[in-house]
Image 1 (tube, rainbow, N blue to C red):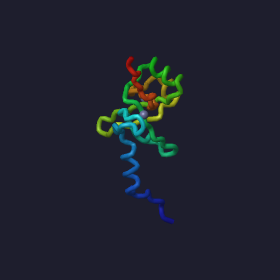
Image 2 (image 1 turned 180 degrees about the horizontal axis):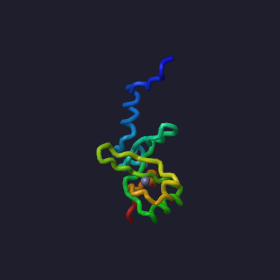
Image 3 (image 1 turned 60 degrees about the vertical axis):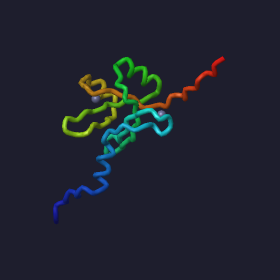
Image 4 (image 1 turned 90 degrees about the vertical axis):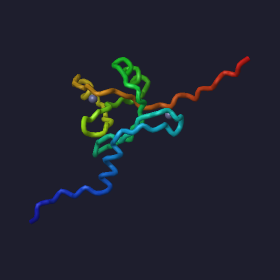
Length: 116
Ligand SMILES: [Zn+2]
Ligand SMILES: [Zn+2]
């Protein structure tokens, strides 16, 4: 019997990895600058589009009450930034020092009131 060998990384794996790198991209609907990345989760990767504005604890609570998901923006010293799923255990651990960001929700288009 031969020992199972680890599969070599494929091109798809490289594409997968780069999809996890955080990019600034305008929202296709409202044109606002947003951060996009795929969470580095093999089981249930999520494509995230988030507002780049960091949230403090209060702002995060308000965002969650408004039905938005919040995420950790993980700055790598030697690796590109990633967006990580922010579950309640991670928050409860109290050791999270990441920048917190929230899902991007398009603002209603600003319509200028007609003057006069
Ligand atoms: Zn965190
Ligand atoms: Zn938008």
